[in-house]
Amino acid sequence: MSDITRFGISLDSDLLAEFDQLCARKNYPSRSEAIRDLIRSSLLENACQDPGKTVMGILSLIYNHHHGGQFMQSLVEIQHDHHALVLSSLHIHLDSHLCLEALVLKGPGGQIRQLADRLSAVKGVLHGALTITSQG
Ligand code: NI
Image (cartoon, rainbow, N blue to C red; front, side, top):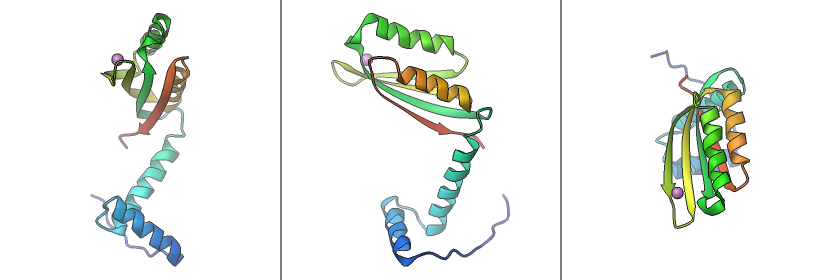
């Protein structure tokens, strides 16, 4: 484990009060833990801007499976075209019409975003959301 360095932060008291509320709502044990999380998220977001860096992505898609045979075919074909990026998929039948599909993706950030955009843009997909994370 790396050395711990302490440093001080000067903040507007209103901003600090809002931050403390956020910490309480998210059950952070301390401000330090909350700030560490914010810094990690920011660094990760920055690293994920590099289209060549390997990242993990979770893509969730909501759609109505009655949209048509061609629609389901398109979703499957796009995934097969990029099978090396798709590690796993989970399909949940939410009700008699709607489906939730969650895809676990791994690969260069640029390709992961492109694949997520392509699947989300298929006519009939009601909502597509990509969350990117990395091992680093
Ligand atoms: Ni379904």
